[in-house]
Image (cartoon, protein in one colour):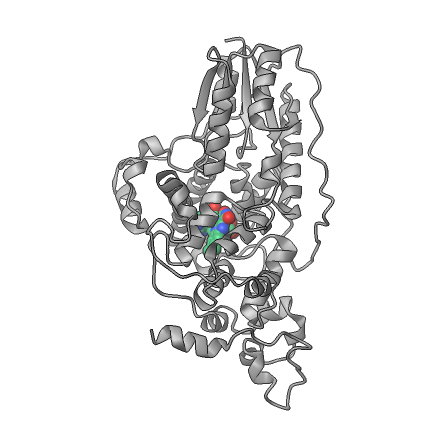
Length: 473
Ligand SMILES: Cc1cc2nc3c(=O)[nH]c(=O)nc-3n(C[C@H](O)[C@H](O)[C@H](O)COP(=O)(O)OP(=O)(O)OC[C@H]3O[C@@H](n4cnc5c(N)ncnc54)[C@H](O)[C@@H]3O)c2cc1C
């Protein structure tokens, strides 16, 4: 084969990137390309942006890093603007390309785009699609993806009982040969004109790209030695090391889960193997599970009634939704998390579960509005993980539970000193924890100088009564 194109998507890495490795091994010359398709930057049907400025800046840095790494090996990263089904066929014709290699992922829009590209390519061009973003390859699963259980635990138990193993990561190519007529690399996406907030309360600085992703693995596993206590710390709320923070790099494909798995295995051999080290693999299995579930259920995941077809009369209350999104509900644990999300693009898993439950369970607002808002804001947004977790939390997805989270109880348990809420809501500083989590009680005593509606919002609902109602059926 003379020339192959590698169409980079959410796989912005060199290490363990099978599309790149196979193209380099098979073709004389290779043309890596990334297409900034305007449809990834528009609005969702819910009026939210598909990608906010924080994730846009992260992605730009991922592309700069990828381009740098490709250049170091003699290659290049072409960057082109436009609809991908127009850009790729034009490139293929220009450079007389024989094959196109690309990652395939289960998102419905991603699938749609992929099909449009394949349709637009001439028959003579070979199409090489590879599933490259999960720990386990779907072809290796004991049960075909289309038939996997809709509950996580039986699926995981079957997998772990089987003799299926994680495939070995493939090495980064040492050299990339570009065709001689491959000119004009193209500009990185423009810096976003919308401000990217900086906030020293952020859990950490997330620099985009494979180089920074690997640095984070080095720092979390090897230098900090935090994996040995991951299960015990993972419900934390403040700081860099209560959890791995690998998610932004996994979502953009700067890190491959198989490569992380190999690092965990090495850590288990060289340092310690315990329940905590296993638990990071367990979480990567959750990630796989949501990917396979999206593959199985497709567009059904995005419906109000979800994959289980549960009839729920969701409220479409824009005012309630806006207060939730802005972190102005008057319920501190919800507001602190939403403000952290808005300022930094990241919140803990515990925080995500609570704000999602508050919107869907306590306010009964359409869960899809919340999922779309996360899609805009999260630095680690991933279609399967986000919509899958939201549907789960709203009671219309996998493992669905009728149980809501009692946000007040959760706050008192996971933030006993109210350090987290006061970090994000300085108006509540100085209140004892029981009042910082329930400021409406503080405002009833003369002892504390807190005026609700002035210093901090009045709660939008009687949240204590609401949880009593939910708890008593
Ligand atoms: C409502 C809601 C929305 C979410 N949206 C996203 C999203 O868009 N993108 C995303 O990557 N995660 C999402 N999650 C899952 C989880 O909250 C994040 O992966 C995690 O908080 C990221 O931090 P970490 O890398 O430090 O996680 P760690 O605790 O260190 O976990 C390691 C890795 O395991 C995976 N993982 C952990 N928990 C989950 C989970 N529940 N579902 C899927 N994968 C998981 C992630 O890839 C994560 O990086 C969501 C969870 C909820 C409840």
